[in-house]
Image (cartoon, rainbow, N blue to C red; front, side):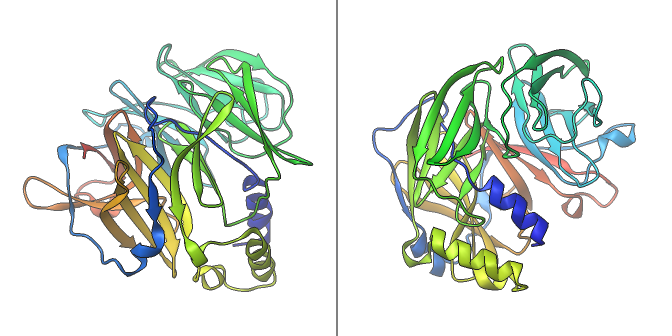
Length: 367
């Protein structure tokens, strides 16, 4: 990790977040003991239901991407965010045919243009997407179907490059560091401020926290508790027990200094269990962790906290990775999973698709 990356991550890590269990809440918070997984072997390919596999295709160069994640699925349209260093755009595909439907790509510094997409929030009710700017007090609202600027929303300036998380159906959460800890501003589907949350005494770091999207709601991990947000409150989603394998704020600061002085990041982080991605729906949680120089994508039953599936992989840059079994007996390696309303979606990279194809594939299934 470069020093410039550390500086950015240090800012990004000073945060907190949100989630609802597909608009349901549980009476008890499941407790997952991650220390028990250290000696657990990898599982066989995961049996899934209603598996659908479609090759992504299109007649223009815009249909192809290098580094993208699914940010939402609305009706028969999947919306992907490409985050390649040379590109920051949204791409739409039909989830049944794989057909390229269009893009939102307005990089620049003029009216209606953005420098980079830090957060994108799809509103399925009117087919729009909100793109908040981090360097000026405005939010652009584009039409997904027509790739046109519908309106520019003025807002109070928030001096933060922290990625906003959440969704138009729950709350869009923006983290702002304060002298006493952290304040989370919450916005509705018109980017109007609806509430806020104070997290007093919060201490950030580079490696020991999680602030991300699970589906299209936000998640925040502080100490060993994983939270979701509803307007005005944080709700515990799960207790992720790491014991002595947890990275404390003090150890996080020491690790950051070692990396800045030239130490190998992976080597100094080997002893710890770091939580790197979360997705959940319909009582099942996908949890991606990093430990001992490897990544692990595990699936849990949230009703009893039991481990259902485990996959170990080497590509640390990949947010999540599982292997599913097909009805014909073959297996598919699925990356960058996204969960919503009982369905799981993921991307099959070019390395794992048919030899005569030159683009990724999209997979959908249920557990």
